[in-house]
Length: 596
Image 1 (cartoon, rainbow, N blue to C red):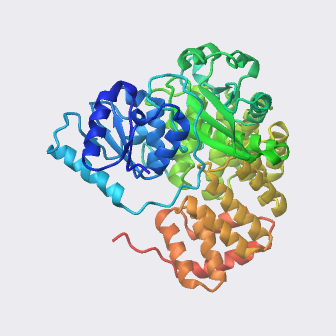
Image 2: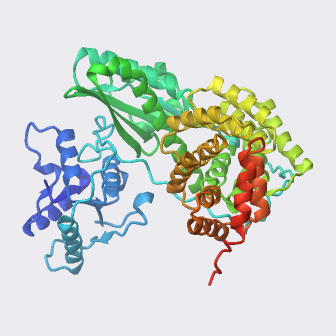
């Protein structure tokens, strides 16, 4: 087991040797690719070294920040809490590492008494001598052979990029979402934008067995078919990429222009003992950055039975990653955004469920409509955002209901066969008290795209309001299966809990609210409803604590607002009156503490 794994790009090998020699003089065992012996396999040896190293020293330079492989190794080290980044020349680090404290050794020439070197050495010894952390549960695997040769070694699989908090409002949030129609300002027709496109490259057969060639080809076709049922990415046909099956992959940026794609999925298959291993990675086709990599394994003896499950697992996790990346890309874009990007920013705002972020969501959705007045998704997202705010905070208002319905109906008229449009329009209709209409549109979306998470979520919400808990739970389970680790899955768990409440299963509801709060500790609905459950169980102190938390976090959540929320969530259920009684008995006892 090495003490240090040294990550760098080949152009910096002379500097890397300086660090390797200096660490070894201090009695530390260093692994770097120069130590590979003839006959050893890059991927297997590198995987073992990176996973077992106690410290991963990443040398950032103008060249290594562009290396897909160095970024991947740094990402995995960060996930495993072994990362020690070092600047060896002035450069702009990858954005996800900008907030990581980084040693500056840009002027170090190898002097053993240099204070900056001694500080780095001390940090490294701290990592080497500490108790090792628990092993990661996530599978880590080797990626396919590199598409470029700028790095010294083949990377290991990075985890999904971390989710950043939803953006703060650009101005003080109003207490209600303004219902006024947006002012349409001039934009070029090209600013509408659209869902990004993705090419699935032929998977490499790393086993060398003819039968695995057949599996690799079939795997690509099946993954394309599964991905085509998603709603956040457009997948080009395999015929467009088939020519890369037997030839070297060209420059990624040139290929992205040729195929008109933003993302590339590449992968390989190989046998490992009694298992067949499939490794996939999502790459930004313009920058070459690895956005996500994951390994999937199934026993060879059960492969025929598990092949469909394997394909769906790959597609579901990839769809989740594209969803994350598109939201992050839209949030970070400094200039004018397209209507698609404004819609993504609107959806991203709902990663925190409060009145301020609902206002941001509606603001971004109105921007999408202003950019492209005939863009169905913009109207659907605006209807959903306005509907959610109405449901949570606005007393009955026929005029506002009409305005929200107008946007939903406009969206459905403009693009009646788009599952993402149907799903958001479905949510809007359910939020304004038309759950029958909402379920009708949601079920149509499911028929069009049964593998998309969002369409199942919209059906689940409608079923809650229609007092159909069994159907609601089935849709929420399908949602989770289609979007594992999605950044807004806390909504799903909250509404699973509501379905259990409908069925009178209070303990199961409490468990589901706990799962929601684990993802988003300040979820006001989960906090308030969990407080009600604790009050029912006689846990008065716990109930008061939870209700104080939500009242402190969301001052707009008055007793009248929460009574309205409960009445609208359970309009047909007997549980409604019991929940209202418990909330009223608890409210006066749970005054929030003063800010002081």
